[in-house]
Length: 135
Image (cartoon, rainbow, N blue to C red; front, side, top):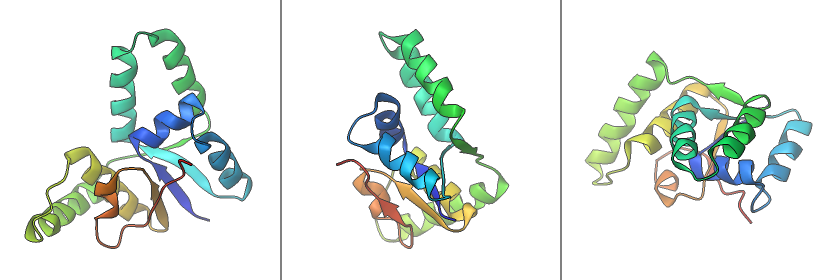
């Protein structure tokens, strides 16, 4: 089983059924894989929805998605991974947004996990498996 952790942009594509992301996620679940988000991604999605002009409709879409997604925690293990990743990125001179490092840290704690993103920053994290499902 593979775990697919959606970043915020790809999760938004899932919610809005853009770029084939929703269909790809359904296909992965049908193969026995798990698709979900990290808790920091949920926070970003909630913020975006609260700020949107279509708050109620978007909140309903998010609640429906949460019934199908796994929501992985940002826990103690992830916090230590965050520290390791951030230090490694600093050593190589590659600063990155906190949320992106939190997503990567969560993925590393899950073991066999692939982050799904269009964000080039995540592709720069050493040893992180990243795919782009947006076609």
